[in-house]
Image (cartoon, rainbow, N blue to C red; front, side, top):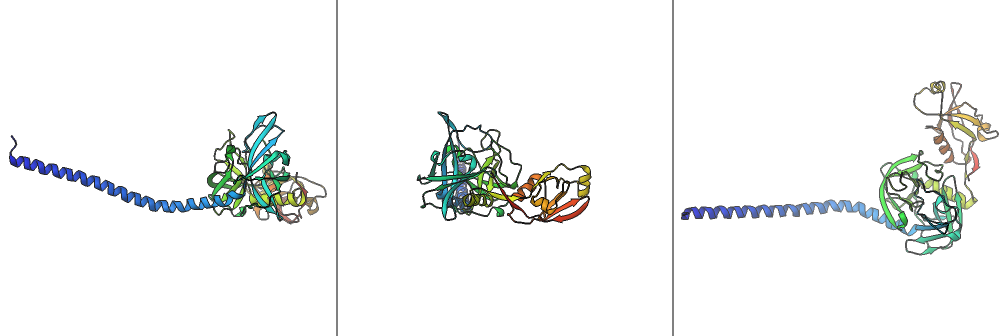
Length: 375
């Protein structure tokens, strides 16, 4: 039998063990409380960003328009987020997005041309986020830049606040608001993946003659024409296309910079068409070894003039077939597409400085750009 002393020692050891376990449990709970307190402090910092994003979205929502278009002209779906289509009695229902803008004291809904063309105003349904339906009066479209504006009857609407797309930089945080798969008022977020993107994958409609903003924010059918928004609640782009093998989001979306989009919209409203600068040359980026040697670099830069239109600004300025253009207003010309887009974004009447090589001699020419009507 166990002696009295042994029993006392065993009881003491047991009590110590229980105390140790209790202490450990209390210590874990204390650690959890401390961890929750730290998490709350960290979440407060994160919540600041969430509040900024929430406010930016809430300020933009009243200007966003859900667009439903009934069209009679079938088109084959491609790699653009242009909408949801359902064939019913040989009619196609297309869903997209737009936003209200104020141009010359009248209200218009800006969107992509491919969302509404070739429908008439009677075949378009415009719905605000508060479920009010807008009444379209007329539609103006431009093919080259994939922009459309729809004049509306209502005046008790809120126009969107527009930002400066020239100030957009890589990794800027952005929001996309629209109707992916018809789900009105959906928000996705991401960053600016790239600016001045020209080699945009082509879907079933022409890619706008513009340098595009690229984003990884989720974009799907139904987002076309909707706003790309910065964290100040300013629209900096018009969603236009996605690069996708499936026709849905793969994290590579594109938007027309708002500076270009509003300029095109203003042209449509004021003149019924878009006037863009015209130089009057044909170009090639395929240079011979001798031409590369004349440029003096192995880098793939510069373009060659292959044709000059008679009586064009280029002809008047004395540009010749075979001239190698290296810079446009001190911006190095990467290829023919790059130069075409720089001309398209310039002002009518501008006199850009072209840095060139002719017969291995360097020279500068300053043609005066005239207006060319876009389609």
